[in-house]
Length: 124
Image (tube, rainbow, N blue to C red; front, side):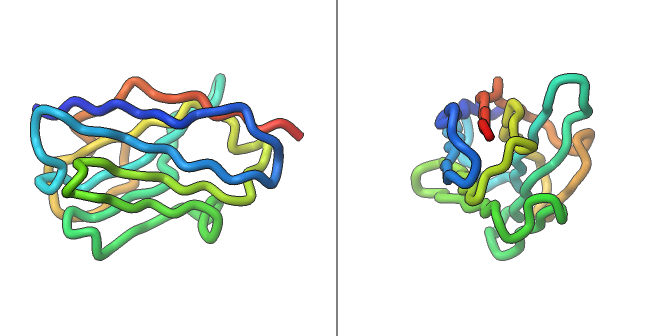
């Protein structure tokens, strides 16, 4: 079993950049494909970035494509989410998640392990 802990959430202004980190313990992350999700009040949890187990493939929804970048450092057992050109609509709790599988996935139900989340607030 793997434990995930997110960090880096802040209150920022529109147009700013922010990098989130997710550190793993218990098992090495190189056994998992990974994802970053977010959930705003009264909205469903949605994927914002996913990376394959090998790190070769990444996928993003259109809402963040070109602004967000997911990366992984297996040596540090950490996954990152670089967020640029932030908008007020990006305000949410951000979660990292791991799934036992090689490929990327957009589906919440396919992820086995979750962190506790970190708050990102973007002011206009």
